[in-house]
Image (tube, rainbow, N blue to C red):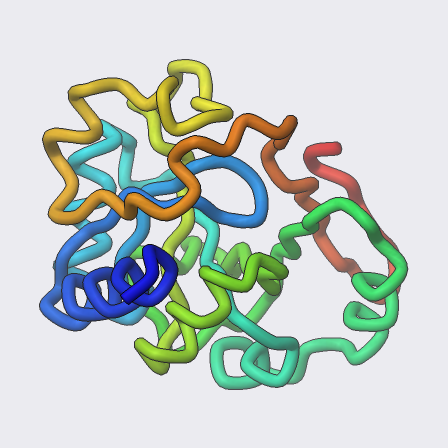
Length: 189
């Protein structure tokens, strides 16, 4: 069994058990869990020592999944995303069917359609979106490569994906935008 398949099976098992994983995404290494499981989301907040009012990103594998977690997303968002080259996270209004501790007090949620094949397969296997937050203590710099992830984080997650640990190509966090009545508001470039 190759590394991709092995890590997919193990990651899926841990996520289904309500556990947390350290994994490569289409941007930087992230800490993840089942985005519909409140207890699992609490674990991620605890690992990161992150205040509960600070939101985290949710990954889906395809634009068709957005309507399962957001009421009436503007179809123009998807046309905009198809033109972007950099991974882009969108803040959507009217979130639904996610862990309540992922939804902002204003009803918003940050979702990115993941382009990384490993993440897409993991999301499809789980059948649910996955939390994706940088693999660091809140307020500290985000690790770009696996070897920059602190031992503290590595010791706190339930499973560390071994796939792509040697990758050292230049990556960055996603852009973050808010879609407001057809207007793009850039929150992070």
